[in-house]
Amino acid sequence: MKFGSQFKALAVLAFALTCLSESVQSQRPNILLIVSEDNGPELGCYGDPYAQTPHLDQLASDGICFKRAFVPQSGCSQSRASFLTGLYPHQHGQIGLATWGFRLYNKNIPNLPRLLKKVGYRTGIIGKLHINPASAFPFDMHEIPSANFQRNDLMRYAKVASEFISADDTPFFLSVNYPDAHDPWIDQIDGLPEVPLVAAVVNPMPYMGVDSPALRELVAGYYNCMSRLDSLIGDLLNVLEESGKAENTIVIYIGDHGADMLRGKRTCFEGGLRIPMIVKWPGRMSPGNRLQMVTTLDLMPTLLTAAGAPAIESLPGKDLQPLFDGDNPAASGWREYLFAEYHTHAAAPNYFPQRSVRSDRYKLILTLLPDMNHPDYQDTIRKLHGDHERRDSKYQLDLPRIIDAALPVVRKAYRAMRAPPKIQLYDLKEDPFEFNNLATSSDHIKIKDELMRALKQWRQATADPLLDPELLKQLTEEVQSVTSKSLARKHQWQYPRYFFSESP
Image (tube, rainbow, N blue to C red; front, top):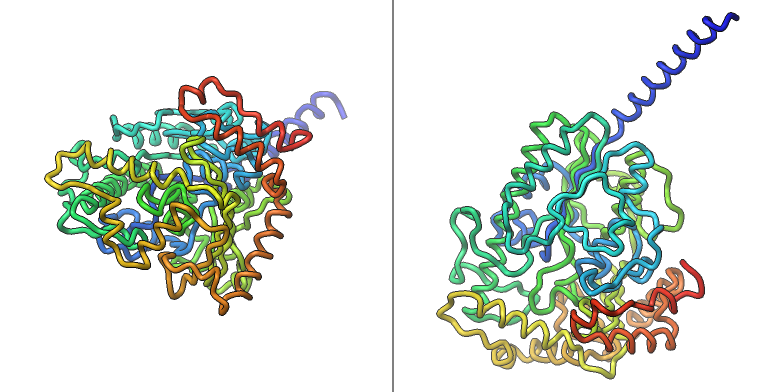
C-alpha cells in the first residue's frame, strides 16, 4: 500500500474513533449536584406542614425522594468532603471545619471532580467548597467561592450555571452550593420569599421538644430561608431546561446536614444527620418514594458508575441504581446498618468525639469521652441567643428557662445532651425524636449488644484511628489546645501525621 493510501486509511480510522468517542461522550449523563446549607428534610415533599417548597416538591415528584437519607457527620466541611470522596471523615481526615485549618490526610485521595475529569467531563463548582486543601479538587471553574451568608447577588448562581452548562457539548459535572438555610436566618432578600412566614404560624421542629414565641420566630426565619432556597433552585432548574440538556442530566439535591437548632447540627441525633436527598434521571428511574436507608457516601459510587468511570475499590457507600427501579429485587435487604460519627466543628469549643449506628428501628450513640461535659451544648445556646438578639423582636429568648419548663422526658434528654453517658440507645419507632434513652433497660440488652458489635466491626473495617486510646488522647490534647480561630490560624494540625505511620 502506498503512503497516500495508508494515510487515507489512518485518517478514516481516526475519524471513526473520534465519532465513536463523541458518541460515547454524548451518551454520558450530565450531573447537576445541588447542595444547601444547614437544613434537614423540612420540605413539603417530606411532609413538613410549614415548608413552602414547590420546586423541590416537583423535583421529588419527577424523580426519587429518599425518605431516609443521612450524612456521615453533621458538619459542613466534614460532610462535603465525604460526599466528594465517598469516605467517612475518619477515613479522609477533614474531621473539623476548613476555616479552622482541618484538612484531608492526603491531597491525592480520589474525588469526584478529579475522576470525572479523567473520563472527559467538564467540572465546575458554584459556591463554597470548604475543604482543605482546595487544590485537591481540580474543578475547571469555581465561581462565588465564599460562603455568602449575607446572601449577596443570589441571582448570579443561576446566571453562572447557565454559562457553564451551555459552554459546549461535552458532559459536565456542576456542583451548585447555596448559602440558605445557614444562619443568620434572614426573612427576606431581594423580595424572596414574597410573603415571609411569621412566628404565629409555625412550630419548632419536634426533635427540639421545646417551644416559645421567641424560638418560633427563629424557626420562621429558617423556613423563610428554605422558601428562598426553593425559589433559587427553581431558577437553576429552569436554566437547565432552557439549555436543552435536562433530559440527559442527573439532578441531585441534598442538604449538607441538619438545621443549626437544638439537637440538630453538630450532633449524632437524627436532627443533625438526617437530610433531604432527591434524585432525578429522566428515563432511567421509576419516580416515587424510597424508604431504604441511604447516605451521601452512596453518591460517589453511583455517579462513577453512571459516568462510565472506573470504580474505586473498597468505598463504604453503595451504588444507588438498584433503588432507581422500585421493583428491583436487589433493593430488598438494602442496608442493615447505617453509621455516622462526630469529632469536632471549630476545635475546642465543639470537640466531643462520638460514633453512632442505627438499624431500621434502633439507634445507638457511643460517646468516646463520657466523663466530660459536651462543650457544644452551651455553645449552641449561646449562638441561638445571638441569632435572636440580631432580630428586631418583641420577644425574649431564655433557652435555659424554656428547657427547665419542658416535659420531664425532654428535660432528661437535655441533661444527657449536656453530659452524655457512654451509650445512648433509642427506639426510633416509638421515640423518633430520641428523648428516652434505653441503654440501661433490661428489655433492650440484646439490641444494645447487637448494635455495639456492629459498631465495633464497622470501626475496625474502616480503620477508625480513635479505636486506639493513645490516638484518642493525642487528638483530645491537640484539639483542646486550639480554643480560638486566631490560634487555629497559627496552628499546624498534626493528627494526619500521628494517626498513621504512613500516608493512608
